[in-house]
Image (cartoon, rainbow, N blue to C red; front, side):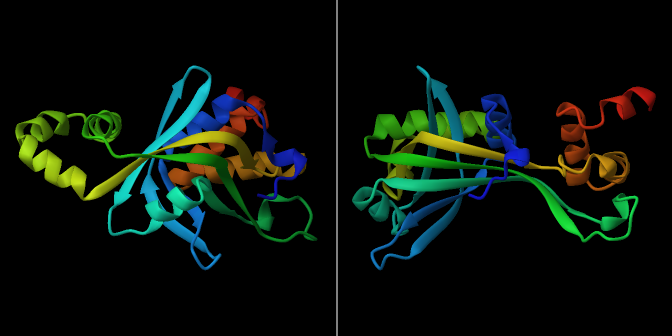
Length: 211
């Protein structure tokens, strides 16, 4: 991923927060023809013993798990909030539009999970994160149903080997920050989140104090 220095964050709390807040990711592998193969799916971030693991699964008919088995290294991309940025935020006219966004890209090493108990532990993490109330319903469906459902999927752990976090909020153009913040703070849900990140990164701290 292209990350100009002004947009790069090396703070792991930024990356982990974005992953947890926007867990629906793109898993990117190389297929048997040498082309990118992409599966959109939710992933759960597990931090243990200094490692980051991304937990997920795909349908058994999806060939992606076979590509992970043959070529375990892959890329995972998480897209956070994003919004158009109008050139009207600049005090001068010689400017062009752009786009603001927050994203995390991870290089991962895959390990397939086939044992029922291991799949069950993985699903507990996913259910707890997205729908805790469903846990009781899932248990009530019985082992026969659970085994049938789990046989139709392939679960995996993706160990994060490296990550990049890009926070593109026009940091290098301070003359735009006040107008950009005001626009985003009054805008869509994504724009409001971007406005909050501008405050968090210290781009417009004084503005929030005056509001």
